[in-house]
Length: 134
Image (tube, rainbow, N blue to C red):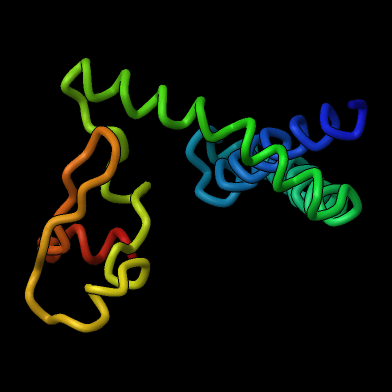
């Protein structure tokens, strides 16, 4: 049970470290005068991402698959709650490139609808959305 608890905590740790690295790369929360601090935090964030990837590898595939089963109901509850609120579950930049993920998209050039829990997604993207999802 302890190994499963550890595997469950590794995925959010990777996401947090990845977001910290993203903030340091895009300079969203740093002023021009904070360049040395930003670089120091960027090194720490990059080390945290690498370390968390190593820990995920060391945890093993078995516990990561079980962790994904534990996270699945929470994902569906999130989508359900967003649907009840009438809000999009994901922004275009957060969504997966549906043309690559869907077998029908690879075979057809015309757009079609994808039915996902809490969302109705079309492959007919505007030019700005295409630029964001690439």
